[in-house]
Image (cartoon, rainbow, N blue to C red; front, side, top):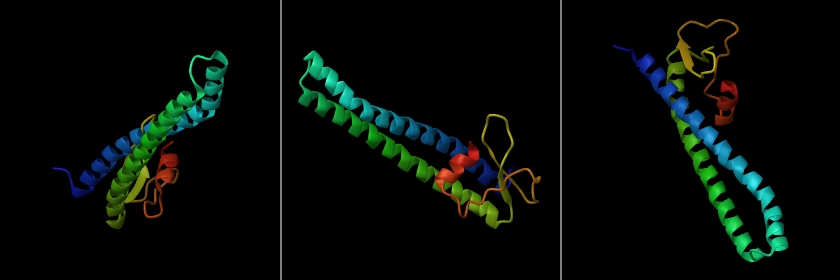
Length: 141
């Protein structure tokens, strides 16, 4: 039977996988929306030059698509923030119980580890009391 600390760490790692996926989708939609915003005037210019579509109808369709893209990005951003709060609550429980929470040095995979004694000097200990979602994202990159 696994201990309470192992269970909290397992749940934190499950939330970490979902956090990384949500953050990846957020960046994809936000970046795609920014690129689309930059391309919209060029698309309207092409519509005008070719005379195939009215500029007004093209602008409405383009702005609607941008709105959908940005709102989807905001939704995934809010989801990743809620997942971060789940990770943070579990890791804070471990830290308050006297464990050191750190990123395990596993090749091409992000996983959190916890130990009662201080890990090796080259391992970065994560402080979830002062960490933000962006800090966690950059620690795991």
